[in-house]
Image (cartoon, rainbow, N blue to C red):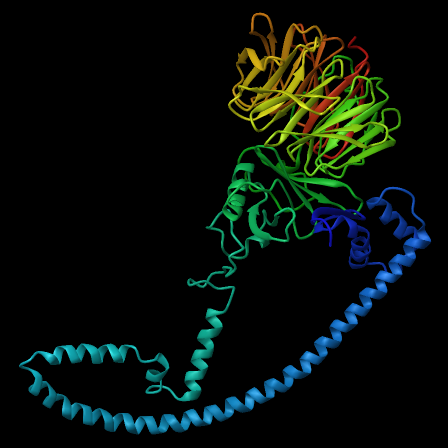
Length: 626
């Protein structure tokens, strides 16, 4: 088989399946998976075509699909029949061998009994002879001290005799066999430990709390068994964790298994999705029969164990409680919810005319949809990791994307064709953006650097070094002369990117800074942080002007709107907030997403947002805010 195995995904009705396989065999795998998961006694062309359309793009003939299905079904039935025939054949041989073994055991038992009877008499007579001669040897050798040496050797020989030979003096062969059988059954029982409590003999099962060992943890309320899989391999391990486990505790469990941090998303045995939201939140989603995704838990801090019922509105299932405010009357509702991505959406932006929306997702794809009706225009595939950032070129011809596969890629917007791969970073690339004139691209990476590239040639122009930790955000000034960056070291920096030097540094946040941008007139910087704060800075004086508080959770993104008159922010409280730049007052809260909101984009009177709930939402910018 050419190529390497990849992590592939199927959607079967309301359930999602992830497996390791070859992309060129994906269609064949689909029919095999459909046969295994389909519970209907009869399969219709309409049913098959609908399921096929969930997993493959383009037109497809239902009749041809049915022929392919019937061919695979026949193949599976033949395979099953061969397996059953082999099993039956092996079973007959096994029965025969069992009978022969029973006869051999009976002959052996009779022989052991005869040996045992002779051993009793020989042991008694032999013991008398040894006792009578023992005294003579002791007297003969007492002067040279050899007796102690011989006694120690003899005692040692007695201790090394097999346990079973000593038992024959106390029990019959039948009784001994019964006892040894009982001991063997206890030692081989996977459900008892030395104290008579349940434990597993498998090295692949661990628990977060070693005190909870009876009964199996996955059967206790509040616990779930999770399968940890390594990408591009078939290796996996299992752990049992509380449903309210924090991200840090979860990663500690992962590190015990893999010795490093490899896993950021999981799937349990039922196919329900478990996702980790960046730094400190583990979330589980349950897919209902109608395709609705229910949130099972969210534990940014240690939480009390909640009831195991999925449909009850427990504390762990409820959304956070942000400040809901509207200065224009009734709270604003979204215009449209756009679906299509199969995993969290990390980035979104409008094209220069505002007619289209570009998005990048954890499902490793980018999509362009119509801002008018949400219809799909183009899909981009090629990244080997999550797509973390994306941007449109100012001339509307190209897009750029950044991924945790350590690369940025340039694509033709209309055709989906890859133009260039920008290689040079040595770690995940979290952010990328075009310069105002479209001639350059800047990128920010966990390798602690930013890089500036030529959008025409794809060549690297400069590398900006100065941050001490991972860089998460970057962007050009409106003039295009400078680059701003924000990092895990809590600092903002402004760079002369042609010289490769930073000439201004801003300190004030108390945690990772996720987002930074210039104001439209280049006079201010706007930053958003994990410390739940938004800060406005003066570029000239390099001083903080204002701190804006309102989100009760880490803030992922903040940007200017309406020529800098307003600020739009989004966070892990599932909400979007609109603030007045001049005063820092909260003007509007937009609520509608069902999980963390990662990014927002504004074009005139339209606002777009993307979320961990796998959706894009399109909003009307509040009309009373002009």
